[in-house]
Length: 246
Image (tube, rainbow, N blue to C red):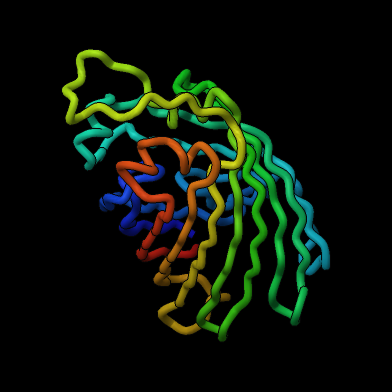
């Protein structure tokens, strides 16, 4: 499935300003390798489970492009502290799926991604565990609910959440100095729903999808002045688009 749409989300992690951005979508299987979506990235699963197996195992590699505070910084005070670099995060992913958890066609999946920045931006590490429940609502519609958390190391927290002392800033643009350390910086929940326009999700074709998400900054991700003074710990995400399944 290839798809594209539009997202409406926080200007940066911890912001209370919202911006529009492109929303790509990629999911499927190619040569026995499963391709699963991730926020701003994908995960490849190299374990080719047998069709109809009650238990599925996932093991592979995930990647994510992290553009937090790289562009679209709407808050002038946060913007005064400068734009950051794009992080390209890569690392292993593993998980397990229980098929037919509550009825014949649903599933529950547990997964964890451990990613390291390889582009020299934050130079840190994130670990993101998640649990997802997926079920069709009819032959033409399906829905998925996921819960997740994110743990970051000191390098990640310092890059995004620490507030340095910059003597050249005007008093109106100056925030209290803050030194951040690692820990859980975010928890969240997402709902994704899809509808096939010929009312049959099993035969491919054109479909619409919608995504609604909420997350709450935690730890120093919530305590940093970028969030506690200039933003909000509560973060919302809305997205919608079209996809085509081959």
